[in-house]
Image (tube, rainbow, N blue to C red):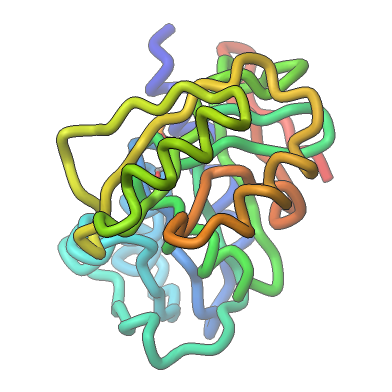
Length: 218
Ligand code: 5RP
């Protein structure tokens, strides 16, 4: 079975939690894309009445193309539910996000959400967060932020692409992250580092898809 099938199972299970009149924050990436397609289908087939806000320009465009009414997040202080993927998630629901470079908007929408559902295939579950951590950096600050990352024991590698806000995206390899809270606290204090992919308290529920089916954890 393909990983895409597992992603789709997780996404389909999660969108069953969406009900009429909800304002839904839509995540970015291939798993979130299954949720967007599924919500579009429910609007067409069941007459589901929702509005949505996207966590990236690509997601806004995909949601509109799927027939989902999309509001600009700028004017919204809260959303009812956020559904988004992750790159890694540990048993304490701590995740690394930002593989798609959207973690700054994703964290804002997740923080504005009354509830966040994370949808993953089983390969994303890890005992300890380890993959390179994406950060978004103001171009003006890039050399300074890279120095700070190295001082923390990280190895920064810039991506060739910019974020939706036209900032730099840098993957920082810290090896296994023993204390994600401590790392997040330090990163949050570096001027010019606008966002990072450590999601430590946002996620309330996860759906994990695999060959056997889908599991919900809360
Ligand atoms: C984008 C993200 C995605 O949720 C993450 O990269 C997972 O992507 P996919 O669902 O394609 O595996 O954080 O910034």
